[in-house]
Length: 115
Image (cartoon, rainbow, N blue to C red; front, top):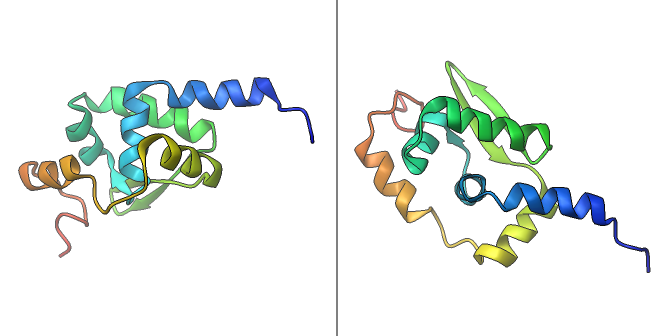
């Protein structure tokens, strides 16, 4: 058995140890979400949310996809997906808090306004 790469594992765990990044990952492991949805979920301003998304994107954990003027983020790292399932439990559909927030915010994204 190979010796674990403690430096690598430590850096990955640090990414998950931040509560707001963990909330973001819990949401986007279920479905791609735009920044508007994540702002509402975290109750934080757009620059803060974008900063956390940049950390996750730079680590190769998430990817972004532009749809018109909106950018959607999704989880792409299968290893982290497995860790999240172990930490947060298996997926059970939409994040209930996110479903409620999408009904309350006026989001112009194509998911909220499919016209």
